[in-house]
Length: 83
Image (tube, rainbow, N blue to C red):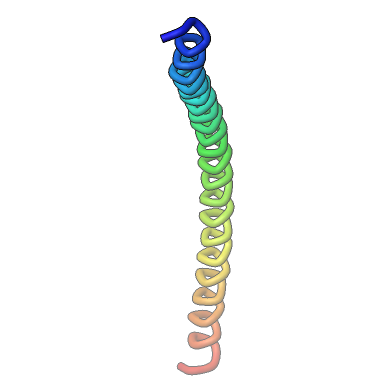
């Protein structure tokens, strides 16, 4: 083989391999970035879920107090008007 043929063969082998390595490193970087962003999103969603959970509990507590007041009024009404 001549030097030109060897050089062409070397380039034909080395270039795709180097592109593959570069591509793999880019994929790894992308995966790491996505994992970090997903982690941040998870943290934000969990915080929002906790806030919603607290708001829901507060809403149910208000409803429960309102029901208790209505039950008390009903008992008083029954005692006053349905002896």
